[in-house]
Amino acid sequence: MYNPLPLFTRGLLDDQLAKGKRWFVRQTFPRGMEARLIAAFLIRGYDEEEKATADQHLTALKKDGNAFLYDAEIPAQLEKLRIAAGQPFGYKIFYAARKGVEWKPPAQYQEKMRHYLRRHHPAWRPQKQGDKIQIGLYEELGQLFLKFSYSDEDDTIPFDLIEKY
Image (cartoon, rainbow, N blue to C red; front, side):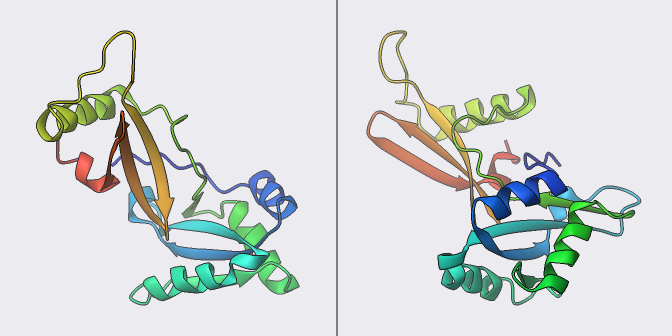
């Protein structure tokens, strides 16, 4: 299973803290799981004023026994984030960094997206001069989505759906 998200590193954590991220939600991340791993997790950071959104994200994970909301202003919780960013043995921790339209999927996924577009949007036929089809990768509450845009139309689908093509 392809995983488009970056590993959570100490440098990335420091960058997010410098940008004002205070709240960090941890969740189980099956897409990041590999053989011989104990677990894979996804971390998503939220600004100081986004506490309500972080709480909403955590609430959406009520069935995830590994879900947790870190407060980076609590030293013990910040230390746990630093440990996670160090990629402890047996674990892979990813960060839900926003990719948007600058994301470049591998060739196999480009073909899956072309197939999806041919099937669901046959009228979307860009010309050499004019509108292009934009494809962006987005995350919301720990879930990945693809957003297809052409002219004045949009279509957003769960990332998992594209793997069926």
